[in-house]
Amino acid sequence: MSLLKTTSILLEAFREQRPLRGGSLIITVFGDAISQHGNSVWLGSIIQALEPFGLNSRLIRTAVHRLVQEDWLQSEQVGRRSYYSFTDAGLRRYEKAARRIYAGSAPDWDGTWSLLICNKSAEAGREQLRKELSWLGYGAINSNILLHAGSQSHSLKETLEDMGLSEQVVVLDASTTGFTSEQALKELARECWPLEDLAKRYEAFLAQFKPVQKTLTSAAKLCPEQAFQLRTLLVHEYRRILLRDSDLPARLLPSDWAGHRALTLVATIYREIESAAELYIRETMETTAGGLPAAIPAYKQRFGGL
Image (cartoon, rainbow, N blue to C red; front, side, top):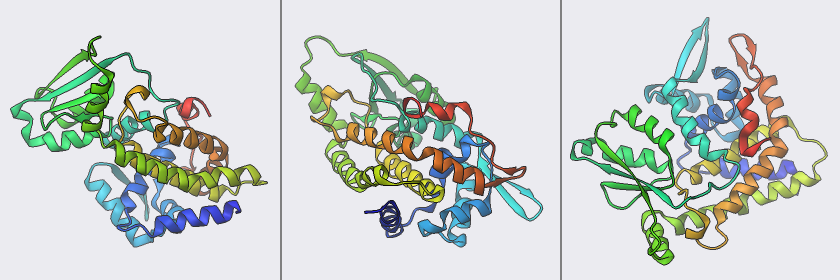
């Protein structure tokens, strides 16, 4: 199968998703690409780039409007053109996710845990807090207590401050004692995180993107537009699973955890296509000063180094 055919199959699968979540895909593009190249882009560039994904101008404009209302994006009007960028809050939210998405390897674990306990005063924002912290790898012991393997102090502090809940929760550090059985810890992991569902989703992701890796080895030259499309779909579909996952150590996960294999596949494909995708981004997308600037230095640190 050719790379063109593989890309077409992936795009068609995305177009058939219902509902077609344009806002989520736009966040992926801004996080994966635009934020690394000056964090501003002409709306027309986004419309052109996302048309093959099944998003027409009307859908994109509607999605962008909602993202502005949700404080993800902000706009700048120059003449008749609208330019969009992450807000400060939107950029912080994506950067927290990016620390997990572009990790070079599964995190080490020293046996410590972070426990977050919601006070009664935090009840009004508890469900949103659980949602935000699940994107950081926290699991729920019950409605008031959240658990994370290892420290997430920086991202946790940002989240609590952004939500105005710093004074309404208690954060404790804990450690696994020597007489705690590993079986009990594995049972706790199954209760706090949807591991079976995550494994199924990772396996489906691997089946979907393994053909990309195979076709890349025989592709003579990468088309920049195809590379951008593949990179966007790769990160988008991986992000949707990863941000529901835990940061549990391998010994508490099922054997041959599909999430670890997914990370290896994503990093491998990303490294092979990123330079061609960068070419498309720099040559076709526009900002107020013309083409997008070169990527920031931190971009090259993704997945442990590109």
